[in-house]
Image (cartoon, rainbow, N blue to C red):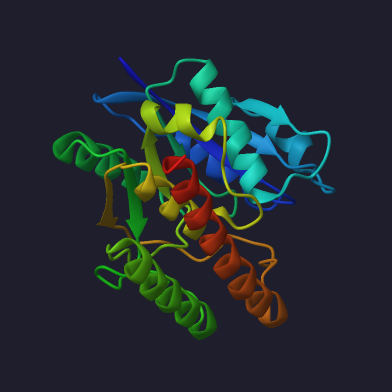
Length: 239
């Protein structure tokens, strides 16, 4: 049977992580088997204590690597353990496990390398704050200018990748805020990317780490990161 690794990066998600892991375990599909892989990013709360009591694999990082490093750790684990696919499922409960089969079926049908779950195709479910929606529109425009493709939800971490992508990201994956930058990386490596509509939820508990000030920093940092990734990959392909 096809194997999917559900990579769950978690930093201080004691209020949410059990429900997220259970939602993955509860998936019943004739198409694939799926295993929850929690990457504990040096949490300071009870996250690691909780996940070690659950029916999942735990990758317990000794230092905090941020979301990019945590996701890359999970992807490397999936590649080394010969999973066919991996899907990122955030530890805050916003990504609906019941939509994973939809992402998988679209990947098979269209022979894609990356499938992104977008909340903005049908504008259903939790739409995030006005400030974040502005940032997402900005990154959509920037990616369209640089890459010639329209990705409506480029900050969505709810994405399914195949083993070709897993091999690629073992060597390089953007750090800190990887989702918009990785689209540039994937596109310039000639990977086929598609979005499908999903209905996301509000986080189950806790508070997001991205407030107003950090949102401004996020936009500046990611803009620089997108240009750096664009130049880096272009340079490598021309040498």
